[in-house]
Image (cartoon, rainbow, N blue to C red; front, side):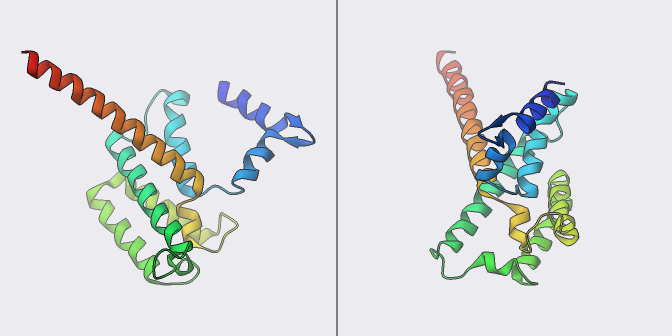
Length: 171
């Protein structure tokens, strides 16, 4: 219920003739399917008191998001010898790579395969206003959120290792 109230406030509260939603969208006018998926993954425990993905899959998803975003961003900035982002406009090796990853995930990490299939289906149905496959996969917000989540997971892991090591030493 709280989410619906916050959504209404964000949508209808106006500051200088723009809603809070419009201010949020000014930073990123269209979120990728990856961003929307990660937001849903993070909010579901608060809505239905049940997680969608195990933590190991969330960490793998965030790792994928950070690495793929970083490679695409470096490519777009000309820091790599080729422009991967341009591959997203037409059938290219980028599509083949995504297909191979998706099929591989069916066996290796089935929950993540569903997310990758969602990328492909959303792109095929043109759900977002972009004609580039990579706009369906990642965006700056997803990169930052995934990096923050990986950092938090690393800190938690490091703290638990420190306590575990301390117990082993004192025993």
